[in-house]
Image 1 (cartoon, rainbow, N blue to C red):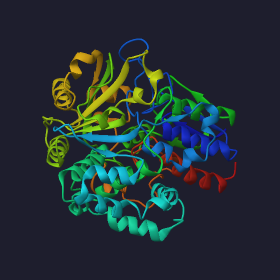
Image 2: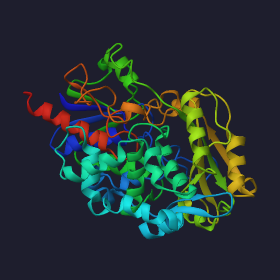
Image 3: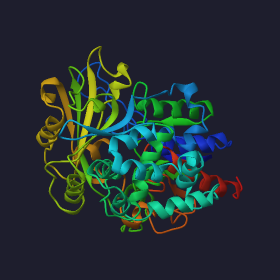
Image 4: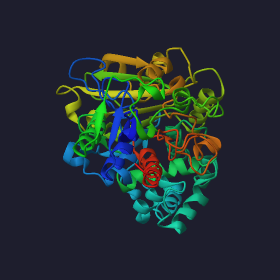
Length: 471
């Protein structure tokens, strides 16, 4: 009998398996797709030689992850690559605000009226970032905070809506950039703890950067898999699990799946019926004949570029996607240009690039034209650079990854109390009605992102359970 079986080979499932194997438990992973990866994959979606990340591409929480930091993933091929700047937000007048590694450069891009306010916001937390991120991402009750005073101060700043936090800024540039940071989790700007979301992304950029993985996000998943195999774990692909009886006998079962899938497989009935799935995205992957012709020079060397004319445009796009049945026009875009930092992603002189706009859950329309019209506002001549494109709306995203219910790439709405307490209101979110069944997906704290911490935290709950059980 195995000690643990993990269902789903995304970053969280693989991290949970590694954490258990490192502690001497026998572990097997079962994945429905033909390759490991979940939201961290790399494929040639458009033309030969153009390596795209179908979902996550830039990894601010990956490089800052306490779980990944504790593993020798570099030995297994993972290398972080940084663009000149983590992120830029261009404006229609050809200027840009930037999120740079330097706090001073970032503050200066906002202008003199907001430079001091921004420095006062982030500088108290930066020296304690490594401890803060561990405490922030390990909650709830998986470990005692190492610096409870800093964590409490962070909570006082971050728990209110982001719209409260941005009141400290006087000009549109800082307000817009910060609103865009919040939108990375597809949460309306007036939601609980959205200030913390924006602040975490800003601090991550200053402390460790927003890198890409050399060769593509698949490198993260492949490194985790190789490390797991060296620890004695096994990985089985092309193995769809429809019920618990499909799996070999084990002392514990750990699911890197949506709550809906877990309830179906484990026979939990309506246990997770109150769990809400949120807005989706419409994503376009591009093969380009050259770099994106951004009008703002700062955007040309940035790994990530946020695209919207102002805070109100971002707010309207998020409202339409999360609270109506229509797609926003113009959309707020999050774009990533991996080949700026990693030229191996495309043939010499060519580039890969992706952009997505927010749309309602399950939306079946085509946002390609609206996305490209928005890009042309900030990068005139963009369409002339396009060699090929691959589009994916909510139905395609859900088909590629079963965790993305209705195309929700966050595996559950990151709004209201569900941003903090997911998948249920519980002090032990990784447990389920069955004492030997656990959940470790992005539907559990700390939530979305390629960081493995949901898997790490769930593994703690599992090994505590296994140590109290006779074999």
